[in-house]
Length: 388
Ligand code: PLP
Image 1 (cartoon, rainbow, N blue to C red):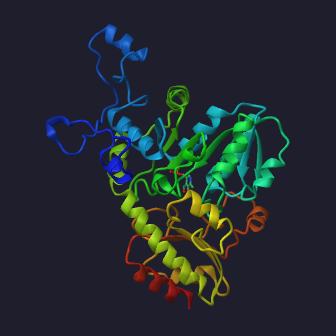
Image 2 (cartoon, rainbow, N blue to C red):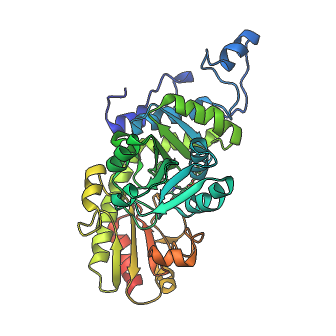
Image 3 (cartoon, rainbow, N blue to C red):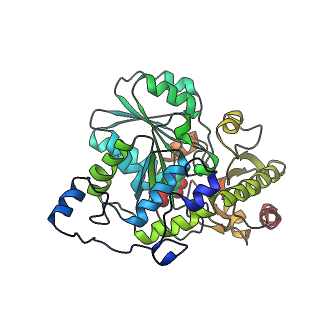
């Protein structure tokens, strides 16, 4: 099954026959599982049997989701979490201890940034934020205590592109783990493990779900023993487990991931080109534009450029722009069928200090669009009317 194409794997996974010959797997909506006797207890608890104990540790619906996403990312195993932030925080805490250093790209999803800045540091972990779009900044870091390099590519909200292979090559020489948030690209557009990353995390809330009705997360790795440790030593103990119903909805979402990502990317490219040629637009952030920094790296590590575009207005107010929109909805989150718009400085990235927002270019003039899969002519017409 693993050698099949992406869409076939996204639909069938490792699927076995279902009870009652049902086409779709049932939702195992149960908190606990029944043992036959104490020998069965012993076999399961000592991992001699892969039967189940309790849904916080494992559940057949979660296992099916984990197996499928792991195949799609080119990994060996995965752990599902209650949210993307549960996946990120648990993964980082599993790899770091007091005295260690984590190097992070300076622009990240707001809560990932505040988690590192406010929480990791409270536990004695040193955090270095740097601009990883320039690989030379990584080579300049002298701390010997670096244990993890963490980034998103493309990054939220300014779509920074980071060279996964170069970072991973450097990290391998120093036994540093590379953890990449692949939420914007999804496994359809980019497989960081194939470029040498150690762990991939996702907010499954976004494209993996695709319909805006789940909050979930997942971590995938090529190292099965690390995933076992992450699951039973950390996820299980912190308790941020995904619900079986959410895993079932995500299995449904995965079936259409490839066609949705094709359409999101096609629409986003057209929107980016439209914005790039508009007189009221100061700057467009989209890795598919040949003028965008590291476009060549994006083209070499991504299949297409994804569905997120950010841009800055030349004149007029951001609030007037968002209020004029009719089709695009003002909301955080992304990756849904509906086109969404938001202002990172006021919404998802509020946790950044004002000075940092300015240094990183997230002014209140920056607007992020999550291109939906509606007819692109309707999306562009809505944006055009709001830009006037
Ligand atoms: N990573 C990225 C890139 C995100 O955009 C988000 C949320 O917007 C997250 C992680 C956090 O995911 P969740 O909201 O599922 O916890």
